[in-house]
Every structure is written in structure tokens, then in C-alpha cells.
Image 1 (cartoon, one colour):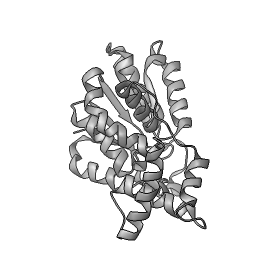
Image 2 (cartoon, helix red, strand yellow):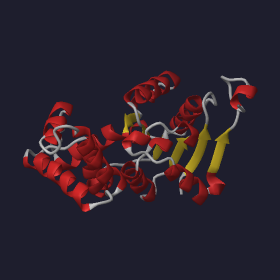
Image 3 (cartoon, helix red, strand yellow):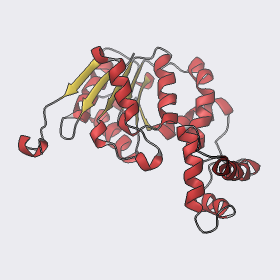
Length: 239
């Protein structure tokens, strides 16, 4: 199983992750075979900059969001870029099904993609109608590229060597993203998973911090908590 790190705010999480990458580079790991995944573009940019500043070969380490990794997998295996639907077109298609509340349709589709389904056949039918609209135009969305990459991961791993994987903000994974990461881990790639269930903020997009809790429960001997807080005084942290 993976190695786990729980890290609250101000615990030196990013510094620790950068130090892990530097250690790998000093041990002569190929920087292009070290993959670091997080869940926002800003976090990926900061992480990449700090690795680059910490080691001469740091700029070659692969740092991306999970969606960017999925995009890369699709391009490599399909030989073309996925046709990602714009937000405007997403809402336009959804309005054809529910003009007054297109977000309801988009949320239903997201539940199907990320959490495995919805509660009743009526909702399922409306979500399927939206997906058929998109399929007729050969388009996908951000959840869709993770789903497509999931189906391609085995072929991609056969062509690409990954020597180490670090996944940050794991508490913000939804079940679909979790499954994609877990396929990489299950392939035998040494993996460090980092997160803090108290900082979960992506529930509105289907994220489920219980996924990280379950991984901790199943791998108690591989858990390394960062307990020291370097940013906030102890009375406030205990509030």
C-alpha cells in the first residue's frame, strides 16, 4: 500500500514534500519519472516552482493537476487531444433539458460520473439525455477526461515508467479521481499520499474525505503525521 502523510495547515507540508522529491533526485531517480499530482493549477504551479528552486533537475519533475494528468494520458494513447466542451456549451445543452435550472442537470451528471449514480430513474434519464447530446458532438468535460483516462491507464503505464508518485490534497478526491490514482498505486508505483480531512473543501464537486480516512485505516503502519504547526499558536489550533 501507499505511504501516507497527514498534514494540517502550517505543518510544513509543502516543504516536506519538496524535500522528499529532492531526496529522490539525489538518489539518482530520473526526474521525468517522478510524478506529483495535486488538485488546483495554482498549487501545481507553486509546487513545481519550489522543486525547481530546490534542485538543479527539479524543473524536469512532472507536476500537474489530476485533470492535466488525465489529459496527458488521453493524448498519448488516443493520439489526439480530447474535445473538451466549454462551460457555455455545457449550460446550453443542459438548458435544453431543464431551462430554468441547468445546474441541476450538470450536478446530476457529475454525481453519475464521480459517485456512481443517482437515486431514481427520472434523474438518470435526464442525465443520460445530456450525455447523449454531448456524445453526438464528440465532446467531453473535465470529469469525462478522468473517466476516459481511467480506461486507458493500463496502456499508458505499459509505455511510461513512473518511479515515484506523490499525491497532494488527497482529501479532495472524488471516487472517480480516487480510482484513477489507485490504479497507479496498484500497479506497484511507490506512492506518497498527503492530505488532511479537516481541510476538505471540494464536497460540492463530489469529493469525499472518507476515501482518505479509509486509506489511513487500511494502512496504519504507513502513516506519518506532521503534528507541528509552524504558523499558528497552539491555543488557536485547539479551539
